[in-house]
Amino acid sequence: QVQLVESGGGGVQPGRSLRLSCAASGFTFTSFAFHWVRQAPGRGLEWVALISYDGTKKYYADSVQGRFIISRDNMQNTLSLQMNSLRPEDTAVYYCARAGYWGQGTLVTVSP
Amino acid sequence: FMLTQPHSVSESPGKTVTISCTRSSGSIATNHVHWYQQRPGSSPTVVIYEDEQRPSGVPDRFSGSIDSSSNSASLTISGLKTEDEADYYCQSYDSTNPRWVFGGGTKLTVL
Image (cartoon, rainbow over all chains, first blue to last red; front, side):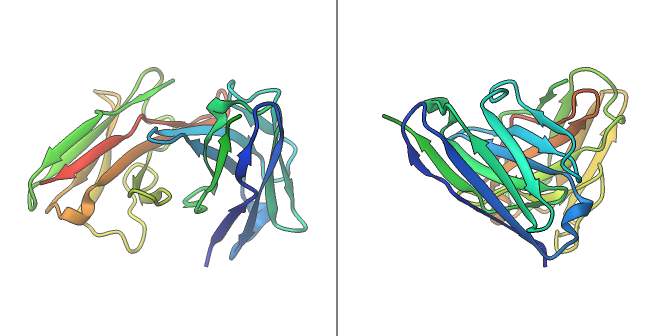
């Protein structure tokens, strides 16, 4: 069955970096584009980034442009999100997702 | 474009509720609309995809539609059950500026 499992979340100070990963299984990884979506505590869903099936096209929300980098390893079936210059407003549960399926999310907390 | 949903709706068990999702610019028919259910502490799950399709395992009490005259999509849940109480989000794709676009979410209360 389709599985998306995020990891790498945790607490970090403002200005620091964190790298999230998403391990995919149960489907042909290279057939799908992937997204990162986040949800701040008590808030709605916010799209963060998109990567094409082959990794050649990447798109970002204005709020993270220039700070976050999305990437994928089509040999390892993994998706990543490198988050730099983190801010308190980046505090959220981060989900990796493809059409029809989402992971369980990983919590990132940015505070002094 | 943006997608606008009512902040909250409430209805009694056994009744029918409809949640709207209005597209601010461009035709609602340009890109498919998907609906997610999110219960507290859980990740979103699809209840309707491609405007009106229902994934296997989702009860037929859930249905979706689009209306070009109002430029909106709708999620209708009939025969409401207390287990339907959750947040519901509509989502579409912006092909001009590639990204997923989400509605703000609607909190459904079944009381």
